[in-house]
Image (cartoon, rainbow, N blue to C red; front, top):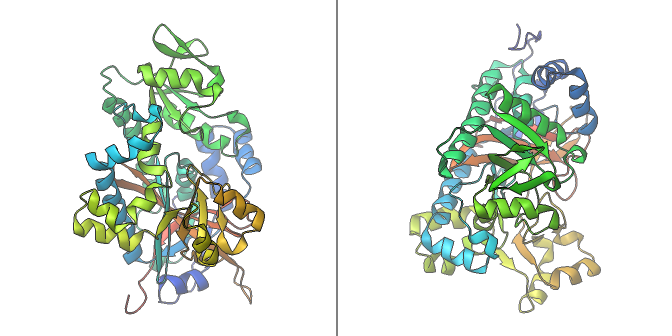
Length: 440
């Protein structure tokens, strides 16, 4: 038989029936088709050279095998997304969060913020929302990956896990940007987008920026890839290369637009000269790691007026999180082997540490302030080679979310303390629904 990309797929023995954990340990009959991936990249990038750039720049962006996730975990993830979003939209939450946020975060442009990323550990009896990000990368890479995956066992093929689902995801992405434009109060047609990051051509995910640029072009939207220093504010319009910019797809990790290089972008955002998404308020409301301390604290949820049923979902799914301070430092140091430490505005696992790996020097930096301590939730595991003993990688799960709706679920395989996209055999992997373990 053949897959949707015309690749010949040989039949194999069906995988054993069993739980998702068993499939992650034993199933190797779903694999990344390298030839199909190359064709999908060339078709979307429009150039063999650009396809080669992605392979060169991101050699470990794609894992060869998918991850199987129990339907009960997928349902809990979706329910938790809904619960968090319901709290964040409440006036009480907004007032509490924005009171401690920088002034720029109090500016509400009307837009919701594209590509929220809800990151989970969910496998077996372990489950927890690890963090929320507002500039979650990798969406377009996952669309490419969906086109390249092949299944030789019908029993485990994901419904829609093919080019059709990738097409639907990409259509949803474009619709999301158009929705942001309308939410920002704009009546004129959206025409020109700037994809903005610091020195974008040097970024690890620069090839994804090219994928976005071409996706927008296929839908009649002009898109430029720009460094924030290349932007200027002229006569009430944000300008890049002499052309007005309607919307900025913001990939900066300067979340509050504080850096001198972000000055024009910050001014345009505050003046409404362009719609910026995601924006500082979205980061403050969703992605500041201190938010997890409130979302996992019953007394705070009571004070915010969160209904008991919603509290139950939050407290069941968000690991207990605390701000590290002088009052609790000794206790947290003693319990460090059961904790993970993250900076308030962290991203990409930078400056994040498993407690059992802490040195005294790093602990002194954490004690100085700006960190939360989160109860450790074990990641899932995926065997990536059938040898004995097989090679096993960890994985987490990412929900791409807009307006409280899950657009796509992806896995990220890695080795070490946290996801790094530098692990041979690791990277993004598609998610297939497996089975719940007996009694789950």
